[in-house]
Length: 231
Image 1 (tube, helix red, strand yellow):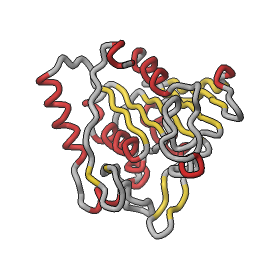
Image 2 (cartoon, helix red, strand yellow):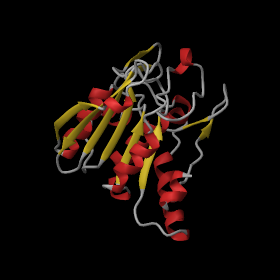
Image 3 (tube, helix red, strand yellow):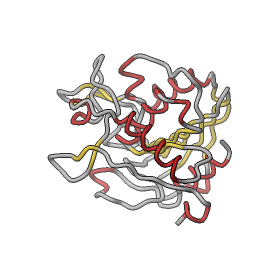
């Protein structure tokens, strides 16, 4: 409804079906230099999701009125969004990620070749993609938020210029802090203190003990749209 109100065309691509549980996954990279594959099934099968998104963008651009393309994702989808922006920056006007880091760039030890406007939202109590990264037994480690921001800050030649809490989003122990970077392209990072592996303002899709809490008053969707309007 928000996209329709603002005249934004939204496309939800299909990933590789999982076998052990419902859902789908993406080849977001990893599997090298001690980093785990995200997601392992798609990485092991060498699914070319970067090419898939390229072809999807080409198709939509030929059948719809498309002025600019923005890519957004959460969790494994965020990892793929990072990877696509790293490998195909000319295809995008901006990158948006929630609860996921640039596993591809970290595992390949590379810096994106072009700057990219970035909005990143991540909860400090995320149990699935921990804020500080960390090792998954038998698989490797996940990139951290600090590392992922550093990768994009270097690509954007950007420096932290502002860090402030947003008091209007205090809610039962949850807090939101905005960190802004200025450079060749902007970076905005919203740190959700106490937030889980969730979409702020969305639904509690799994119990809090599994994915952590959803921030009920801080809307990721509205924040993202406001950011994209400025890109």
